[in-house]
Image (cartoon, rainbow, N blue to C red):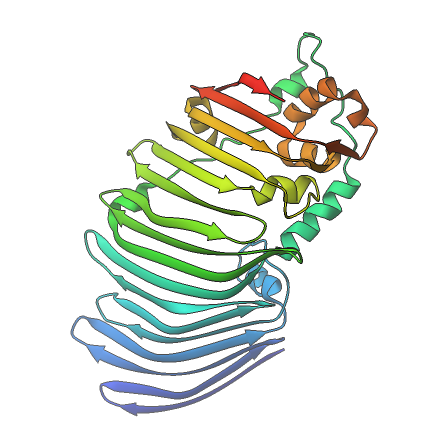
Length: 349
């Protein structure tokens, strides 16, 4: 069902849209704005509010595919679009299900263009991701099919399979933008018992995005990181340093260890490449970890890390191919990475 009501007034050179009320199924647009004809073009200033019951379906109708919960949503903002392409979004208020964020964004065209964004989220609810992973893990096979480290030649089907996709790493847009991006999150919800907060600030200049602040905290995980993404023209350069008390993603997707488990992680990675696969083949650095125990979901770990891990895990713990869980007393290890080759050095216990 489509319904559109417009109330406008023409006062040359200004067109005032005093009411624009549109409905498409369960989506409702309420807006009013002013269009002003100038020598350089048309300028727009006004406000909009878009609400609806099914955000995922709306994006599909617009031709976008996004992994977001199909819940009620509301987008509200004041808009100022200048004739030269300058854009100001102020009073931004976005709500999706139980998540909400607000802030402002300013864009100025040029060579380079300038971009400044300051976003504050009261709550970001990612339980829909973990719930979906739990459903997939429960339906996944106990181990990858036809796994073997016997040294037999790989079949053509196995040769055609790649754990790391050949996804292009296009950072060319960094060379055309200068600015700052800031995000403050009061509460991130990964599961009912896994909540944290975070502050992130990035600077874009000279073809590079560099973190000025990346830190998070909470009872389950706390840590900090430094990230640098640089456009090299035909390839991308990536550098990551990380220190964390517990990494939520591994345990979140593979087990249900207690929140008071003591563990620590340090990571240093650097590499370059035109694609994600090229980058993996060029990575160098190290990953060190140590921690207590917990219950590990074998199916979830294989689903998360892929068949390559399934082959190794089947050799270390043959019972893992039949059992759903493995109980860990403790864990520690160092992974050394040189030009894409990962070695357990000095080892893992």
